[in-house]
Length: 87
Length: 260
Image 1 (cartoon, rainbow over the protein chains, first blue to last red):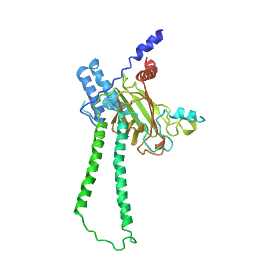
Image 2 (image 1 turned 90 degrees about the vertical axis):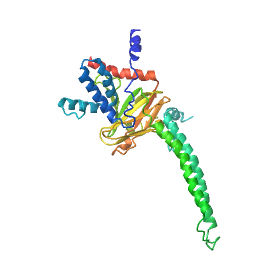
Image 3 (image 1 turned 45 degrees about the vertical axis):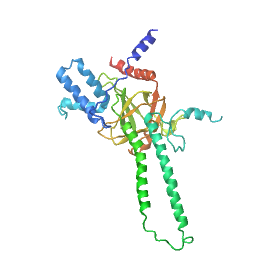
């Protein structure tokens, strides 16, 4: 049936893929890993432009690693110009 | 059997049995390693206990004042001093070698995981985020996990262990669990999986898990976090990979439809 085909097709789109392990952050503490991925994404945007698709990979990484509340707060700080990181 | 329903319901779940003293069944290589190490160390422990107990009992017996009215003045013995310095130092070496090997293998975080789950501790519930499937910062598969009150428990459910929303993970897959709290220190501990990780405010701690068999695994908060510390359980359900895909898909659709 159509719906069975649709379901079977779209289910396979759930790809089991996430941010890879980074040799810069081999310890249990991954706080700076999340922070670094976030900064890398926004540096990429600044360098390549908002419409470039090349930065989406970094976005995936920081969304996997960072809690939603942290990202929300950082986005707010960026808009206010008070973000502490080296963008 | 009269209580067959009880065992059929509880036996498949990896929860502690009533008054259980030993380990829960291992579901990860890490927990299996911990159990094996415990058995190895216990061997030395029993040997030492028997040996020391024997010496102590002999001393009490042979030097009893009725049996030995004139106390001897034994001051020093070079040979015995050397022996009881060398042998006790060898035993910890035999304990340390497998212990360190296990400890550093548990620290392996460089393997690329397939899934990242964020376990966020609150007073007194848990929030879980699956953010690998986001296409924006707002769209996230997030849910809260509260304990089921004792009054609402159904037959076969465990007191203080059940939650309303379980963490669902695929079996035989490398997982990364990011543990952090939203308020005070908590802990994410699941005995069957051999993990216990503190949630420290302002910090993201990572643990790696590879659940080897499908089942339901129970845990509890292991870092005192306030009045309801005992009422913030953890339930992890390991399912086949294709079932995991279906669940994630079904949960993502309503949000995607809502955005359209």
